[in-house]
Image (cartoon, rainbow, N blue to C red; front, side, top):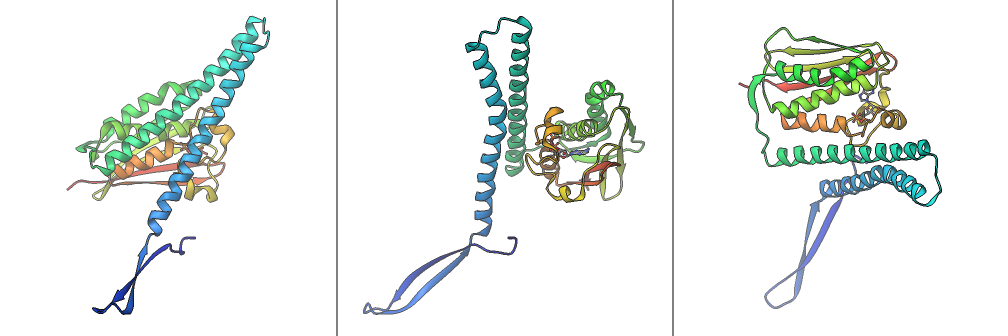
Length: 266
Ligand code: ADP
Protein backbone atom coordinates (compact mmCIF):
# COMPACT_ATOMS: atom_id res chain seq x y z
CA UNK A 1 0.00 0.00 0.00
CA UNK A 2 0.92 3.67 -0.06
CA UNK A 3 2.26 3.64 3.49
CA UNK A 4 4.28 0.40 3.50
CA UNK A 5 8.02 0.73 3.09
CA UNK A 6 10.72 -1.45 1.64
CA UNK A 7 13.94 -1.40 3.64
CA UNK A 8 17.27 -2.94 2.75
CA UNK A 9 19.31 -3.94 5.77
CA UNK A 10 23.07 -4.42 5.79
CA UNK A 11 25.10 -5.40 8.84
CA UNK A 12 28.80 -5.71 9.49
CA UNK A 13 30.66 -6.62 12.68
CA UNK A 14 32.74 -4.04 14.52
CA UNK A 15 36.01 -5.38 15.84
CA UNK A 16 38.54 -3.87 18.17
CA UNK A 17 42.36 -3.96 17.65
CA UNK A 18 42.79 -7.38 19.17
CA UNK A 19 40.10 -8.85 16.94
CA UNK A 20 37.38 -9.22 19.51
CA UNK A 21 33.96 -8.28 18.33
CA UNK A 22 32.49 -5.35 20.18
CA UNK A 23 29.58 -4.28 18.09
CA UNK A 24 27.62 -4.35 14.88
CA UNK A 25 26.87 -1.62 12.34
CA UNK A 26 23.42 -1.78 10.88
CA UNK A 27 22.55 0.28 7.79
CA UNK A 28 18.91 0.64 6.79
CA UNK A 29 18.29 1.95 3.30
CA UNK A 30 14.83 2.95 2.19
CA UNK A 31 14.48 1.36 -1.26
CA UNK A 32 10.71 1.76 -1.52
CA UNK A 33 10.95 4.09 -4.50
CA UNK A 34 13.28 1.71 -6.33
CA UNK A 35 10.94 -1.22 -5.69
CA UNK A 36 7.99 0.82 -6.87
CA UNK A 37 9.75 1.75 -10.11
CA UNK A 38 10.74 -1.87 -10.66
CA UNK A 39 7.17 -3.00 -10.27
CA UNK A 40 5.90 -0.27 -12.61
CA UNK A 41 8.38 -1.38 -15.21
CA UNK A 42 7.28 -5.01 -14.87
CA UNK A 43 3.62 -4.02 -15.21
CA UNK A 44 4.45 -1.88 -18.20
CA UNK A 45 6.28 -4.66 -20.02
CA UNK A 46 3.40 -7.04 -19.29
CA UNK A 47 0.86 -4.48 -20.54
CA UNK A 48 2.76 -3.74 -23.74
CA UNK A 49 3.11 -7.44 -24.49
CA UNK A 50 -0.57 -8.00 -23.91
CA UNK A 51 -1.57 -5.05 -26.10
CA UNK A 52 0.65 -6.20 -28.95
CA UNK A 53 -0.42 -9.81 -28.69
CA UNK A 54 -4.10 -9.19 -29.40
CA UNK A 55 -3.69 -7.76 -32.94
CA UNK A 56 -0.81 -10.11 -33.64
CA UNK A 57 -2.94 -13.16 -32.84
CA UNK A 58 -5.58 -11.98 -35.31
CA UNK A 59 -3.02 -11.35 -38.02
CA UNK A 60 -1.56 -14.83 -37.54
CA UNK A 61 -4.95 -16.48 -37.46
CA UNK A 62 -6.32 -14.86 -40.58
CA UNK A 63 -3.06 -15.25 -42.52
CA UNK A 64 -3.00 -18.94 -41.63
CA UNK A 65 -6.57 -19.40 -42.76
CA UNK A 66 -5.75 -17.74 -46.07
CA UNK A 67 -2.77 -20.03 -46.50
CA UNK A 68 -4.29 -23.34 -45.52
CA UNK A 69 -8.02 -23.18 -46.12
CA UNK A 70 -9.45 -23.32 -49.61
CA UNK A 71 -11.06 -19.92 -49.80
CA UNK A 72 -12.07 -19.48 -53.40
CA UNK A 73 -14.52 -16.64 -53.03
CA UNK A 74 -12.54 -13.46 -53.87
CA UNK A 75 -14.86 -11.37 -51.69
CA UNK A 76 -14.15 -13.60 -48.71
CA UNK A 77 -10.39 -13.44 -49.33
CA UNK A 78 -10.58 -9.69 -49.58
CA UNK A 79 -12.47 -9.51 -46.29
CA UNK A 80 -9.75 -11.52 -44.52
CA UNK A 81 -7.00 -9.36 -45.99
CA UNK A 82 -8.82 -6.24 -44.81
CA UNK A 83 -8.93 -7.62 -41.27
CA UNK A 84 -5.20 -8.35 -41.38
CA UNK A 85 -4.59 -4.85 -42.69
CA UNK A 86 -6.63 -3.28 -39.88
CA UNK A 87 -4.80 -5.18 -37.15
CA UNK A 88 -1.43 -4.34 -38.69
CA UNK A 89 -2.43 -0.66 -38.64
CA UNK A 90 -3.35 -1.06 -34.99
CA UNK A 91 0.07 -2.53 -34.17
CA UNK A 92 1.55 0.46 -35.99
CA UNK A 93 -0.38 3.01 -33.91
CA UNK A 94 0.54 1.34 -30.62
CA UNK A 95 4.22 1.29 -31.54
CA UNK A 96 4.12 4.89 -32.76
CA UNK A 97 2.53 6.06 -29.50
CA UNK A 98 5.01 4.07 -27.42
CA UNK A 99 7.91 5.65 -29.30
CA UNK A 100 6.43 9.13 -28.87
CA UNK A 101 6.09 8.51 -25.13
CA UNK A 102 9.63 7.28 -24.71
CA UNK A 103 11.03 10.20 -26.75
CA UNK A 104 9.21 12.70 -24.54
CA UNK A 105 10.28 10.97 -21.33
CA UNK A 106 13.90 10.81 -22.41
CA UNK A 107 13.76 14.45 -23.46
CA UNK A 108 12.32 15.47 -20.10
CA UNK A 109 14.96 13.56 -18.16
CA UNK A 110 17.84 14.95 -20.18
CA UNK A 111 16.19 18.39 -20.26
CA UNK A 112 16.54 18.16 -24.03
CA UNK A 113 13.09 19.49 -24.80
CA UNK A 114 13.46 23.02 -26.02
CA UNK A 115 10.85 25.53 -24.96
CA UNK A 116 10.40 28.91 -26.59
CA UNK A 117 8.22 31.78 -25.53
CA UNK A 118 5.36 32.20 -27.93
CA UNK A 119 1.64 32.72 -28.30
CA UNK A 120 0.06 29.28 -27.89
CA UNK A 121 -2.97 30.22 -29.97
CA UNK A 122 -1.37 29.38 -33.32
CA UNK A 123 -0.46 25.93 -32.00
CA UNK A 124 -3.97 25.37 -30.70
CA UNK A 125 -5.46 26.51 -34.02
CA UNK A 126 -3.31 24.13 -36.01
CA UNK A 127 -4.27 21.29 -33.64
CA UNK A 128 -7.92 22.08 -34.37
CA UNK A 129 -7.21 22.03 -38.10
CA UNK A 130 -5.60 18.62 -37.78
CA UNK A 131 -8.83 17.24 -36.30
CA UNK A 132 -11.35 19.08 -38.47
CA UNK A 133 -11.77 16.35 -41.12
CA UNK A 134 -12.46 13.64 -38.57
CA UNK A 135 -14.92 15.91 -36.75
CA UNK A 136 -16.78 16.82 -39.93
CA UNK A 137 -17.17 13.17 -40.79
CA UNK A 138 -19.20 12.82 -37.58
CA UNK A 139 -21.03 16.13 -37.95
CA UNK A 140 -19.13 17.45 -34.96
CA UNK A 141 -18.29 21.14 -34.89
CA UNK A 142 -15.19 22.43 -33.12
CA UNK A 143 -15.57 25.97 -31.78
CA UNK A 144 -12.57 28.00 -30.69
CA UNK A 145 -12.59 30.78 -28.11
CA UNK A 146 -9.20 32.43 -27.96
CA UNK A 147 -9.45 36.21 -28.05
CA UNK A 148 -6.51 37.23 -25.88
CA UNK A 149 -2.84 36.78 -26.52
CA UNK A 150 -1.54 33.86 -24.45
CA UNK A 151 2.23 33.57 -24.17
CA UNK A 152 3.93 30.55 -22.60
CA UNK A 153 7.24 28.72 -22.96
CA UNK A 154 6.35 25.83 -25.22
CA UNK A 155 7.62 23.20 -27.54
CA UNK A 156 5.11 23.79 -30.31
CA UNK A 157 5.12 20.34 -31.99
CA UNK A 158 4.74 18.53 -28.66
CA UNK A 159 2.03 20.84 -27.40
CA UNK A 160 0.21 20.46 -30.70
CA UNK A 161 0.29 16.69 -30.32
CA UNK A 162 -1.15 16.96 -26.80
CA UNK A 163 -4.00 19.22 -27.91
CA UNK A 164 -4.69 16.98 -30.92
CA UNK A 165 -4.94 13.99 -28.55
CA UNK A 166 -7.47 15.82 -26.36
CA UNK A 167 -9.60 16.96 -29.31
CA UNK A 168 -9.32 13.51 -30.85
CA UNK A 169 -10.71 12.00 -27.64
CA UNK A 170 -13.46 14.61 -27.50
CA UNK A 171 -14.48 13.44 -30.98
CA UNK A 172 -14.07 9.72 -30.22
CA UNK A 173 -16.19 9.84 -27.10
CA UNK A 174 -18.98 12.10 -28.41
CA UNK A 175 -22.12 11.27 -30.33
CA UNK A 176 -22.77 12.52 -33.85
CA UNK A 177 -23.69 16.19 -34.12
CA UNK A 178 -22.29 17.34 -30.75
CA UNK A 179 -20.15 20.45 -30.35
CA UNK A 180 -16.63 20.64 -29.00
CA UNK A 181 -15.27 23.83 -27.49
CA UNK A 182 -11.58 24.68 -27.35
CA UNK A 183 -10.57 27.68 -25.22
CA UNK A 184 -7.29 29.42 -24.53
CA UNK A 185 -7.42 31.37 -21.26
CA UNK A 186 -4.39 33.43 -20.19
CA UNK A 187 -3.92 34.76 -16.65
CA UNK A 188 -0.92 36.29 -14.86
CA UNK A 189 0.07 32.89 -13.42
CA UNK A 190 -0.65 30.52 -16.27
CA UNK A 191 -2.12 29.80 -19.67
CA UNK A 192 -4.96 27.29 -19.78
CA UNK A 193 -5.92 25.29 -22.83
CA UNK A 194 -9.38 23.85 -22.29
CA UNK A 195 -11.02 21.14 -24.40
CA UNK A 196 -14.68 20.65 -23.56
CA UNK A 197 -17.03 18.05 -25.00
CA UNK A 198 -20.64 16.97 -24.54
CA UNK A 199 -19.86 13.31 -24.98
CA UNK A 200 -20.31 10.18 -22.88
CA UNK A 201 -18.36 11.48 -19.90
CA UNK A 202 -16.36 9.46 -17.37
CA UNK A 203 -17.43 7.99 -14.02
CA UNK A 204 -15.62 9.50 -11.06
CA UNK A 205 -13.93 6.27 -10.02
CA UNK A 206 -11.93 6.16 -13.27
CA UNK A 207 -10.58 9.70 -13.08
CA UNK A 208 -7.53 9.06 -10.84
CA UNK A 209 -6.12 6.43 -13.20
CA UNK A 210 -7.14 7.98 -16.52
CA UNK A 211 -3.66 9.24 -17.45
CA UNK A 212 -1.96 5.87 -16.90
CA UNK A 213 -0.63 4.03 -19.90
CA UNK A 214 -3.18 1.69 -21.46
CA UNK A 215 -5.88 2.66 -18.96
CA UNK A 216 -9.25 2.66 -20.69
CA UNK A 217 -12.75 2.93 -19.32
CA UNK A 218 -14.30 0.88 -22.11
CA UNK A 219 -11.75 -1.20 -23.98
CA UNK A 220 -14.11 -2.22 -26.74
CA UNK A 221 -15.19 1.32 -27.55
CA UNK A 222 -11.63 2.64 -27.44
CA UNK A 223 -10.43 -0.11 -29.77
CA UNK A 224 -13.34 0.30 -32.13
CA UNK A 225 -12.47 4.01 -32.45
CA UNK A 226 -8.83 3.28 -33.14
CA UNK A 227 -7.63 4.19 -29.63
CA UNK A 228 -4.42 2.83 -28.16
CA UNK A 229 -4.93 3.76 -24.51
CA UNK A 230 -1.79 5.90 -24.68
CA UNK A 231 -3.20 9.26 -25.80
CA UNK A 232 -3.70 10.73 -22.35
CA UNK A 233 -0.38 9.50 -20.99
CA UNK A 234 1.27 11.33 -23.89
CA UNK A 235 -0.68 14.46 -22.91
CA UNK A 236 0.47 14.09 -19.30
CA UNK A 237 4.13 13.70 -20.26
CA UNK A 238 3.99 16.65 -22.66
CA UNK A 239 2.60 18.75 -19.79
CA UNK A 240 5.35 17.56 -17.43
CA UNK A 241 7.95 18.50 -20.05
CA UNK A 242 6.44 22.01 -19.93
CA UNK A 243 6.47 22.04 -16.11
CA UNK A 244 2.72 22.20 -16.32
CA UNK A 245 -0.09 19.78 -15.65
CA UNK A 246 -3.31 18.37 -17.03
CA UNK A 247 -6.61 18.12 -15.17
CA UNK A 248 -9.95 16.53 -15.95
CA UNK A 249 -13.52 17.15 -14.85
CA UNK A 250 -16.29 14.95 -16.09
CA UNK A 251 -19.85 13.91 -15.59
CA UNK A 252 -21.22 10.71 -17.12
CA UNK A 253 -23.75 11.47 -19.83
CA UNK A 254 -22.95 15.19 -19.78
CA UNK A 255 -19.40 15.47 -21.05
CA UNK A 256 -15.79 16.06 -20.10
CA UNK A 257 -13.43 19.00 -19.75
CA UNK A 258 -9.67 18.53 -20.00
CA UNK A 259 -7.43 21.45 -19.03
CA UNK A 260 -3.76 21.84 -19.86
CA UNK A 261 -2.12 24.32 -17.49
CA UNK A 262 1.14 25.93 -18.62
CA UNK A 263 3.06 28.23 -16.27
CA UNK A 264 3.67 31.73 -17.69
CA UNK A 265 7.31 32.62 -18.17
CA UNK A 266 8.76 35.61 -16.30
P1 ADP B 1 -7.70 5.87 -25.95
O1 ADP B 1 -6.75 5.64 -27.05
O2 ADP B 1 -8.36 4.63 -25.44
O3 ADP B 1 -8.67 6.97 -26.24
P2 ADP B 1 -6.53 7.70 -23.99
O4 ADP B 1 -5.30 7.53 -23.16
O5 ADP B 1 -6.56 8.83 -24.94
O6 ADP B 1 -6.76 6.30 -24.70
O7 ADP B 1 -7.76 7.81 -23.00
C1 ADP B 1 -7.93 6.85 -21.97
C2 ADP B 1 -9.39 6.57 -21.71
O8 ADP B 1 -10.00 7.73 -21.13
C3 ADP B 1 -10.21 6.28 -22.94
O9 ADP B 1 -10.16 4.94 -23.30
C4 ADP B 1 -11.60 6.71 -22.50
O10 ADP B 1 -12.21 5.65 -21.77
C5 ADP B 1 -11.34 7.84 -21.55
N1 ADP B 1 -11.50 9.18 -22.18
C6 ADP B 1 -10.52 9.98 -22.65
N2 ADP B 1 -11.01 11.14 -23.13
C7 ADP B 1 -12.34 11.07 -22.97
C8 ADP B 1 -13.43 11.98 -23.26
N3 ADP B 1 -13.22 13.17 -23.84
N4 ADP B 1 -14.69 11.56 -22.94
C9 ADP B 1 -14.90 10.36 -22.37
N5 ADP B 1 -13.93 9.47 -22.08
C10 ADP B 1 -12.66 9.81 -22.36
